[in-house]
Structure formats: C-alpha cells, structure tokens
Length: 92
Image (spheres, rainbow, N blue to C red):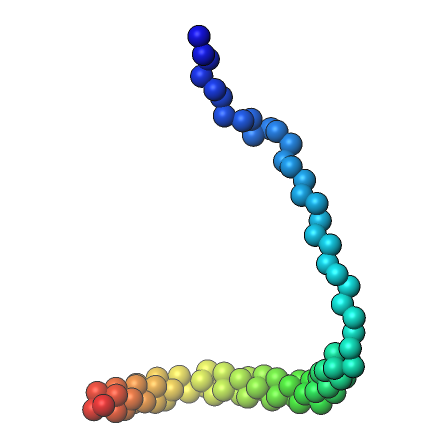
C-alpha cells in the first residue's frame, strides 16, 4: 500500500542561494564629472532649501497665531472662498 505523501516540513532549512557577484564598475571621467556636478549643485541648493524651510516654519507659526486670535473671521473667509471656488468650478 502506498502511504499518502506528506507535504515538506516547514522546519526544513531554507536553501541558501549563492550571492550574486557584481562586476566592479570602472569609474570613467563622465562618472567623475557627474559626481562633481552633483556635489556643486548640493552645495548651492542645500543652504537655500534650509532658508526656505525656516521661512515656511515662521510663516506657518504666524498663520496659526492669526487663526487662533481670529477664528470666526477665518471660518467666514474659508466659507466664502469655498463658495467662490464652487461657483467658478460649476461654470466650467
């Protein structure tokens, strides 16, 4: 008699795959030029991005303060703006 075959046990050790060997890339003059250009762009943009972030944080704080001091006016303005956008969108 043939006994029913049992599925393989979950406890079996997983097969190890051989790590893929990547061929070492030779750095060309084009790669060096791209890397240099990337570094220059980062050096110029990072300070400007940091300044923009600081200005946005300051503006956000000022707006939050205004909203806390004038919640009724802000709600009224938001409602009017929503109404105006709705009217404008419905005509298109």
